[in-house]
Image 1 (cartoon, rainbow, N blue to C red):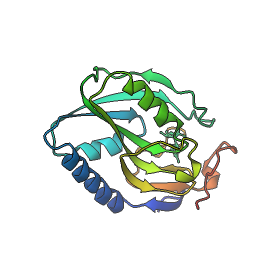
Image 2: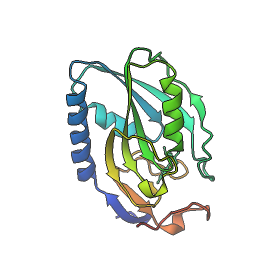
Image 3: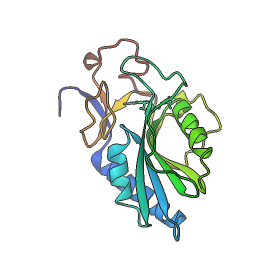
Image 4: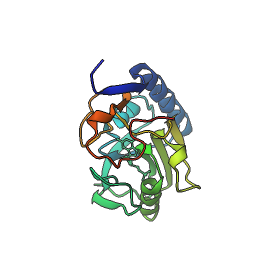
Length: 190
Ligand code: 5GP
């Protein structure tokens, strides 16, 4: 085990199994339709790559990049679009793929922005959710991988200061490996 790992929260095998189930559910629900899968960069890139390989309806992909957490601060609820979609989504069945829903402010904003563009439908698939931290109460996550406790996690696309995205499981870092003291929930789970 790598020295920086406090504990593994979700193993590679658990992720593989759950992503397969999500793909099957999405394939069933969208049977006979064509999907536009919108990945939120950068945290969702690995999840999305695995997810689309488990979806069996015709689909195209597009990406958005938005600012949420900086390297040192908390979500403010003000979300800036750093890279917009390349293609219009008018009349499309759109599935937003997110890494993690924490307060829910980012996802709420993203849904508001995309719904003004006239999609035929707009749903959300998130790998992780931290319900304890939710500030937006009426937020629907149509497809959810795992609920996790209030702790800061990395791996499988998720970073801390741009590191650890490349590990194929989801884990909590040892406190020594954080260099900002303010990050809430870090290192303690549950
Ligand atoms: P929200 O607006 O829901 O509070 O924040 C969502 C975003 O914050 C996620 O897309 C992700 O970028 C970041 N985030 C929230 N919790 C975590 C976490 O535990 N680990 C990592 N790496 N990012 C997180």
